[in-house]
Image (cartoon, rainbow, N blue to C red; front, side, top):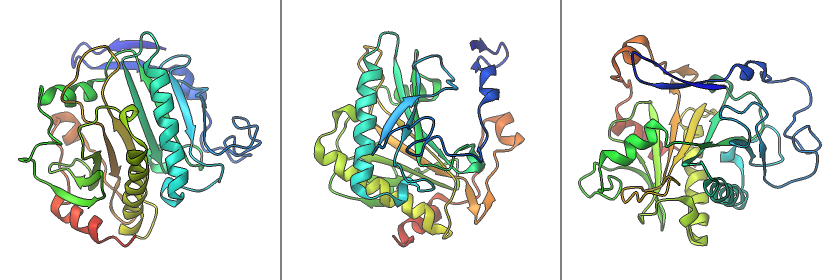
Length: 285
């Protein structure tokens, strides 16, 4: 593994040749099921080091959401999702406290279309030495102001509960894209009270169910959490939030990011965000 900065674009890339050897949707016994390679004992939720780490030893972890194979987070009970969130909080605190770690990124890829290699409910956690570029761009865009707290922001609300909001961004890249965030200005998931954990579990489940109901099928998605860094600096604009992006523009029809977009940096979304918000609100849950 080594870091390379492209001389033309200035972008940093991590070269990880050993990840070529990782399994691709193995047909043998699932390593995440109880009794499997990675989970030899019974469990409710658990985490372990990723054998094919992208960032080096001890800095990439796999998080198992449930012992039930073939399940998805949207199908889990709310109390089970609470256990996942509490594990996220614990691992964020543990990893963020380590020397040389500036950022903890929690994420999930669901579906073969986005590279999920094992059909068992799981996500991952990456601990970065430096704040990643996309995270840093969000954090510095408003300087000390928080966009999510701004009254001037266009709100395409999908759902709310007592402490959380789920909404479609006003400029989404993907056909069905949602941001879920706490109503209070909380920088990190380690700041959550018990009430926030419970309400987060409820709105996360219902949001993901809406993605499943749009086309009455499990839409492949990518999900990640942005939060305050652990680099010792003050980040007053940091407002923890979760992104979910669904990859279909129609049932089974993926939205590909094409050359005109990658080559220009300008994205062309085929679904109007107001229409996306309407369809997500109306999705039966």
